[in-house]
Image (cartoon, rainbow, N blue to C red; front, top):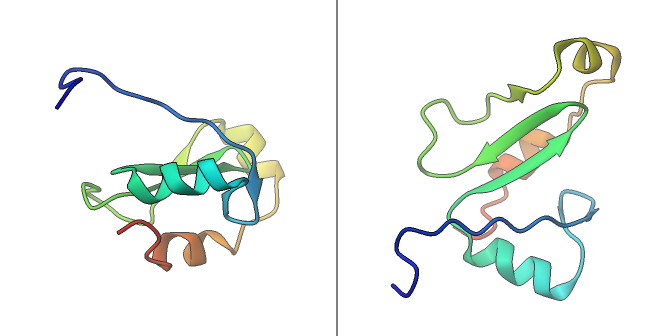
Length: 82
């Protein structure tokens, strides 16, 4: 309402699959779109996703060298903030 054409981006360290700290957890709860980045891949959690659960690969070579992050399924399905 006060900022109809503004985009606010909050960046936080994580504890497990969620932001670290009370303020960061409150922002996550209120956010319409949440993005978890790990192993050179980004997982977006939003009702606006065309293909939910499919990661965006930031760097193909780096992603290929890292281990698969099995916890992303938990992050996408936990219902936090929805």
